[in-house]
Image (cartoon, rainbow, N blue to C red; front, side, top):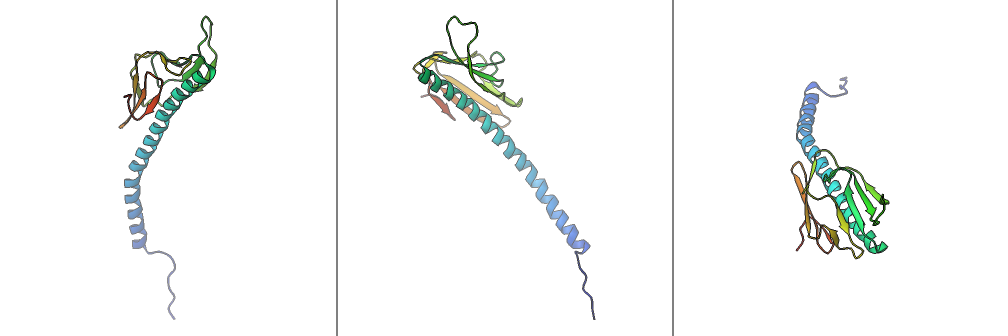
Length: 157
């Protein structure tokens, strides 16, 4: 009577390892790209939401609200959303937005802050602002119109 062998042959094992190596070689760069794009999408959406939050708070409170980067003109640094009190030494902070990854870049760099008036329109600067978020090959436009409206993935009309 013949006894069958249990287990895999060396050839079957080598073929399986070769197929697995090919899948890993192809899959890892795609996975890394997917992770980078997801991180970039999250960061650009965080900036969009911060600007929208500031605008809504300005309307709800009937007061000026300012979004200021913690490092002058660096919109990838921590963002502070503050109520603007004329003559006050410090303005109360409503929300703090975490800094972006070091690989990100947000242009233009000549804008010190975004301020909304009590109607939700831009008070500073008085003209529309077009932010360009870039991380690696991922780029997204964020427009802030003069009326205060924030547009993700586009510019003001």
